[in-house]
Length: 292
Image (tube, rainbow, N blue to C red):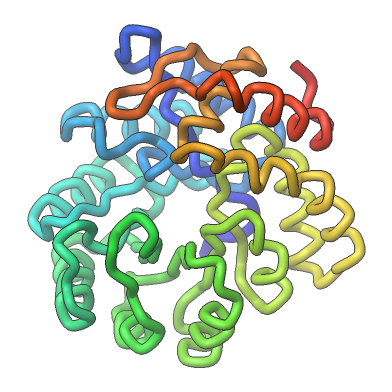
């Protein structure tokens, strides 16, 4: 249903931490011009934990309005409270999103059965296409392939963003689920290899700063052209790594501000990038061919 380079979009904010709607529109235009294959809003990179429900729904509606159907809009609507996930997912559907991305319930550490029942209840309550999101480094719980296979039986659960960076895990999901669910990488550093194994694309942090290159990398990997994909991936390797020198989205928001694309705002408890990393990020930007 979705494929290629799907940018995990930052949420532009002014220095006073208020949302920058005009900046969001400019950013979406930039990504469409540069070839991003889908826009993913209010996910981890979009600072969803610090947006209240009203702001969350507002950003989704604005993204849909600004995109005007030119590329799909996927809205992050996950929560560690099932009722809240249902509310946000319904808001996204009513706002016109093409699909929702639902992170595994974080902090409260549910069992595999709890994760299964959580996602099943959301899917049954709201008929929009839904993509699971497994990122145990942030959630403190790991959705195992057998749970993914159970959830793949639910018609409107259409994909999973697998962010462990474990290619063996990705291979097992592909073997268990076949074409019942699409696999997407949630780890830029291993995304190319996962796509060459059969994943349909990547929900990418790097694509914020290098959308054209990530689009071309995904296009080559989807076509099975390892040489072409590797050449691009090598150029982006520094960004894949250095965009995580501090917690995402701290580094990528600094890079986007350095590029002149967004204001400097970021919400507490996140802070602006430490000065000691500035030259490291600039070197990675130079290696990737980014002008600023």
